[in-house]
Length: 156
Image (tube, rainbow, N blue to C red; front, side, top):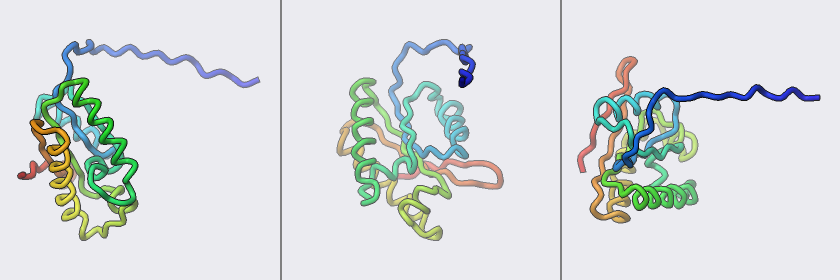
């Protein structure tokens, strides 16, 4: 007879926010930067209650790379749903230094990574603006400095 796992229950001490978020952040699922992105969203941008679309590669998936065609379609559908259902006003696109999605899945050479990410963030921003005119779109690139993560807001 197999032993049944104990039933786990956790009740959050945080109250449920009644107001719908008006911003969505699209970023990579790399757990090394997850807390840093949360810190940026909550403390610097005051967006504790924003929507999140977190997938390997983050905004790279919104750009037409052959290996991520189906991921692009899926992420675009999720974004469309959130824009309509939550009446979003702003999209944040966040990429990070050392992204394995680029290095391993897209096979970008390490010395070309940052230039490729900057280009992709610009293209992803254009794509989002074309799909959702009127939305404010901002792109950021996270860099590691010593043991800290620094977010650079890109122009455009």
